Amino acid sequence: MTMRTRPLGTTGPQVSALGLGCMGMSALYGDADRTESIATIHAALEAGVTLLDTGDFYAMGHNEMLIGEALRAAPAARREQALLSVKFGALRGPGGEWTGYDGRPAAVKNFAAYSLQRLGVDHIDVYRIARLDPDVPIEETVGAISELIEQGYVRHVGLSEVGAETIRRAAATAPIADLQIEYSLISRGVEESILPVTRELGISITAYGVLSRGLISGNFARDRQLAANDFRRYSPRFQGDNLQRNLDLADALAKIAEQKGVSVAQLAIAWVLGRGDDIVPLIGARSRERLDESLGALDVDLDAADLAAIEAAVPADAAAGERYAAAQMAHLDSER
Image (cartoon, rainbow, N blue to C red; front, side, top):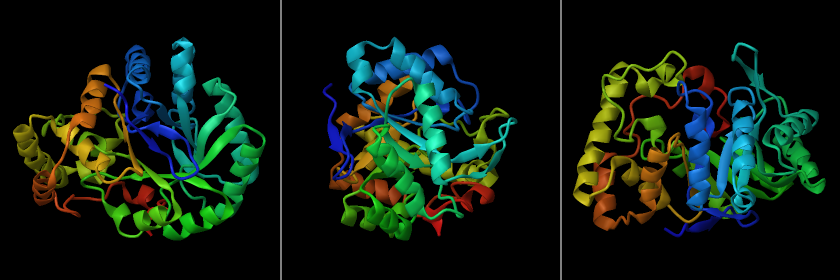
């Protein structure tokens, strides 16, 4: 397979059509296998995946150190092809609790210094605040990233989970490569007011949650018991009747997938891929098996009849429950 590429906005780099979201290798989805995680990163690089996404707060730096370890062990050619997308700004306590966000310029530079050290690199390719700091104008945060670009520590500015007005203000301050935001068959809010603005301004979308945290992967059992350290235990879409209704949507997708001879996950990823060349899905594979399955979506072609069947099976706004718990939803500028 030859990996296709897509531009990350009009000002950003060319990246693989699928990126690898590494969060689950360290946190939030229960325990992970370190050896398998590193092997999965290596397999992704070998397959031509260039975009690796992380956050400095994923297990309090663990994920960045994991990626750094994987890159050091990779052949030089593979290591050099990796483009690192890093989120910052989320504040956490020693017990893992979330305590807010910090977008002050001094904090931005402090976060970057630690990330560079943990990753073992001399620059970050795309740098973005994870959530808008309500006490700091986005212009100040983006301005600080721009200074890091001037100093050679960062290559491009990204955004995460912000709304149309904030996108415009940020873009007026500095060139923006991409907006990272949840986008899947059952999370389509981006289509209303955000996607038109990013397309107007030449900003790409890096879409996370394309399988809705496994909900529409075809691999989530109705009676599955989630681990205590799996945040989905507290996610509205995985609760009670909501879970059963959402898995009904996955079952409807499974019928279409079976007719096409593909997996449910491949169908769901292919749908996001087909939304436009300015959309780069992030696949959250934690094993080589799941990585291989996800990469197979690149070979899935959806015609008009397929798309009509998918839309009928999973209409927009069909999901039951919000995508985050109320306390987390309150931090989403993109939902205002």
